[in-house]
Amino acid sequence: MKAGIVGLPNVGKSTLFNCLSNAKAQSANFPFCTIEPNIGVVNVPDPRLQKLEELVNPERVQPATVDIVDIAGLVKGASKGEGLGNQFLANIRECNAIIHVLRCFDNDNIIHVDGNVNPIRDKETIDIELQLKDLETVEKRLEKTRRAAKTGNKEAQTEEALLDRIRETLLQAKSARTVIPKNQDEIDLMENFQLITTKPVLYVCNVDEGAAATGNAYVEQVRELVKDENAQVIVLAVGTEADITELETYEERQMFLEDLGLKEPGASALIRAAYRLLNLQTYFTAGVKEVRAWTIQVGDTAPQAAGVIHTDFEKGFIRAEVIAYDDYVTFGTEAKVKEAGKLRVEGKEYIVKDGDVMHFRFNV
Image 1 (cartoon, rainbow, N blue to C red):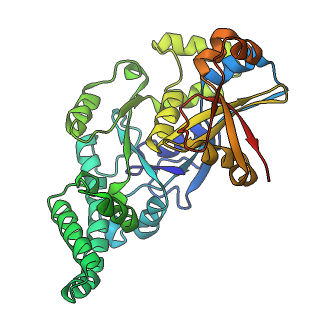
Image 2 (cartoon, one colour; image 1 turned 90 degrees about the horizontal axis):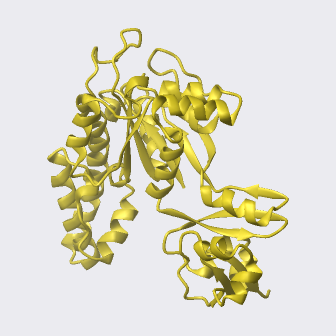
Image 3 (cartoon, rainbow, N blue to C red; image 1 turned 60 degrees about the horizontal axis):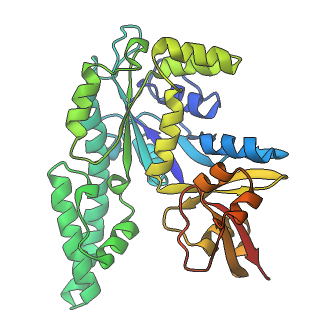
């Protein structure tokens, strides 16, 4: 599961990627500096993991991770291949969610491809390019589907009706994610179409240092624009975040954050938001050898969660021993949790909850 960072050239995408992954993607003050997508495997900050480490004192700790992709800047005409448009759009299609970076700061020394700072116009530029690409995909598919629907094929008729609704939505300059599927068949079809504008999106307003804690007028414009999209807006001073990552010690970083009026780096909040955007959650295993956060999809069953550790765990699943995270912290040790009767034994139908501490019994 990957989240792709998109935006116009020079809005701070590669700098943000460097902050998130500590990988040094090329970052320069001209368009098309990033051509090949950079992929970073980013640790998900989770204070629960630190608490379990304190209680268990393991030999090692392994956090959950999420893949972040730095995709080169899109420009007007990308859907028709302008700039390096076709390649960029293909890279976005391979991602499961979109982190859309908008420039919300003034700086005469950093070129804006359209001449001045206007995050509303910038957002619309990207949206239109993605919508045009989806429209092209939908119209190609409709040609084929209409022929099948005319023969009386019921499945093709269902697909045709949905494609027509999506096409009308895209022609109104709205994203395909605003089309609400009517039933499970339509949900399955929507997934099968693999449209770019059905992907969930998170907006990052890149501000200057003075606006890191409170935002600014540009941020308010963005919030007003996306209020009906059911999308999160995060305010981040990307250049400042880059400075924070360069500091040597935790204490230095905390002092820097306090001066800005922040409790934690904005990048940490962004990583957690990207994790949720991908519909991911965490369960834990906790033992003297290792305390580890494991990544699963929201709604996964106990056997599916076990399969993330090893396929044999899923194939030979017998039962799961489950402790709620809050109970583990309250009682302090697994033994005390058992004494209090708070350890549960769950079977194959159990839906894993975020933060569950689990042991699996299996037989292969």
